[in-house]
Length: 193
Image 1 (spheres, rainbow, N blue to C red):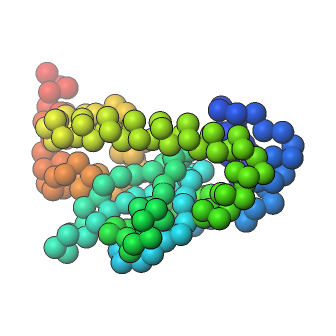
Image 2: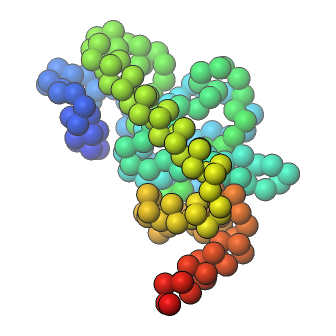
Image 3: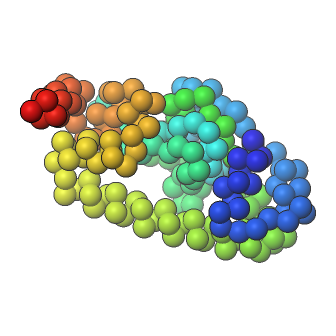
């Protein structure tokens, strides 16, 4: 598990043996079963997550219906808003697959940042990338038709099509499962021509 994390970090910064040992000594690596809720609406959270392996979904329940807003897969981090604003969560975090997660809290992060300042720089770099990606994804979602959203998903995150139940994909695209079926049929028909 640790090597998955070290390989990822090495793309951004070099870790010496002391730094690797400091990370290894923390109790941050957790195996979580498919379907497990990491966070429920109304709960407070003091934990951030980094997906080493698996898939985590964020969703709201609105008028009894799940509305998926994001999927997090390998090498993606999640900091619930509840951690930042100390208010109960408005959404759920749940594992779509059996997952290996790095789970930390602000106190643990502060301790590591103090001992190894380059980790703070790494987190800043990764945070900037996340914010930029989320803005582009949000903009594309707002200006695209449901069919264009689906085609974009196939292009940018084809793994999700195989890993995630179709009703969750439909919810993520902002459509009903029946509409997703029609979109897929139209695309297939176009490909046959």
